[in-house]
Amino acid sequence: MEIEFLGTGTSTGIPQIGCDCEVCHSTDPHDKRLRTSAMIHTDCGEDILIDCGPDFRTQILRARHNQPRALLVTHSHYDHVGGIDDLRPFCAIHKFPVYAREDVLHDIRTRLPYCFKSHPYPGVPSFDLIPIGDQPFYVGHTLVEPLPIWHYRLLISGFKIGDMAYITDAKHIDDEVIDRLHGIGTLVINALRIREHLSHMSLSEALSVISRIAPRRTYLIHMSHDMGFERKAASLLPPDVYFAHDGMVITV
Image (tube, rainbow, N blue to C red; front, side, top):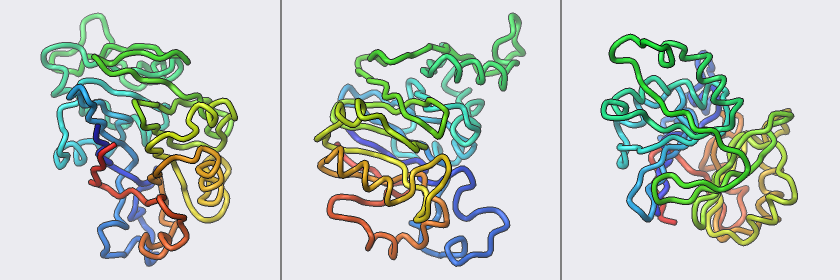
């Protein structure tokens, strides 16, 4: 299985519009981050997209794995769903499957009402909205296990696929989930910045969770420019913890 990081930045991306800080002016490609999204290329040869933010068109055109068969949505904040309309090329033959919690599917229907009319305008995307809860489900031949995660007071979804777990926008992770993930091979998890934030884990908070899960290796995502230059911030990481960057492909 492979994970292709389509984007690794927070909601503003890096560079952030209107920002004149050194990180936003960095020429290091590892400091340039589109909004967070990933493509999972499974053992069954199926490409599964996790989140579809406003940078999706740019991301999919440059991606190595670029034929998603389904979308998993962590939550309905715009930086995670703002590119869903750009999935229309994948809706030509059949409705494109979208798996998410019922509240997220409600928000998608509300934001894209033209896709769900009784008589839609020709050419609009067509989606098969599939509600998920806390029970595992299959996408094609691939088993996906939802993980309940707290984004401040909002309950969102992480996903466990095989020996990999993908978590973004977490502020708190319940003990039961940490126990389920203990010793996992690859953990992908968010770390927004050095100092604390209301609804996202800081670097120290993420590292605390990582130490409890004790994965074999971890990749950090959803960083802001306040994390600083990647090459400098990397010195703060313990062994087997790495910053993911846009375009990175790892084998699980």
